[in-house]
Length: 127
Image (cartoon, rainbow, N blue to C red):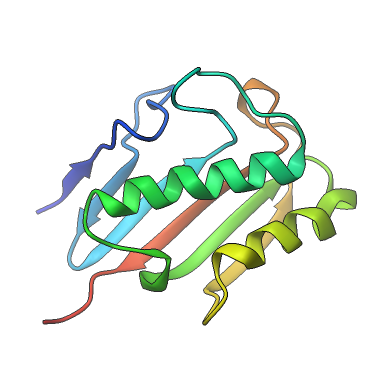
């Protein structure tokens, strides 16, 4: 049975979707952007947006007692791949040990003018 996951420490969804869904030992996290959950405002710049998006994901994962060590796959959506190296440098700080598999794609646009959005899949560890 699937279960919706919601953390008040991450931005509320801006549409009809869950921050994450837990099912069968997996947690599927919806894309997070650089929205600050306290202010509802988008932080400025691709580096700050990458950091904020990953921090938001971290908070959602924490709600089900997971960390970035449990993440096996991410997808990064960017509006301008010319900023890839800046995003990549910030992203690497959050996954210092064994980074997950990742795809990065350029898109025509993201909600609220975001420059980056990141989703994730995590696996719950066996006891």
